[in-house]
Image (cartoon, rainbow, N blue to C red; front, top):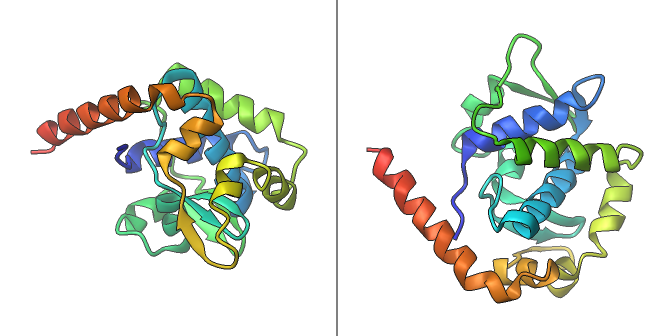
Length: 183
């Protein structure tokens, strides 16, 4: 399985926020847009951008670690708060901080920018409606609760079910290599 990469997730959020003139965005909208980025990356490359777990919630799919970072309950919340500020239902880049883009490849940055541009007219509730149409969410509709969306359901939704074993094997290898360099 994929492994959450905090630094890449932070950089992906930074790229997404910089697509907005105010460098701020409703966080529910952000979560939906980044989930779409994840799906598109999986469809094109078989790789996740952030490695985040996907959870079905009442208002659609959510990237679990990112949601916890926004809420301030994640173990990396203090590092997140150096770059990202929350004001009620919006998150914004802190003016004096820039998380950079050095861990994101060109495809990932282009995907984030393209998704942001494609949905720039949609607000958070438009995005909820859109993501409620995703087959992987419908299959795992949690009602008023939450429930993990299995990677297999996402891969089926993007027509990569036949590649599931290879994608998981690549993710495991990447995790192993990352753990070797962590010390």
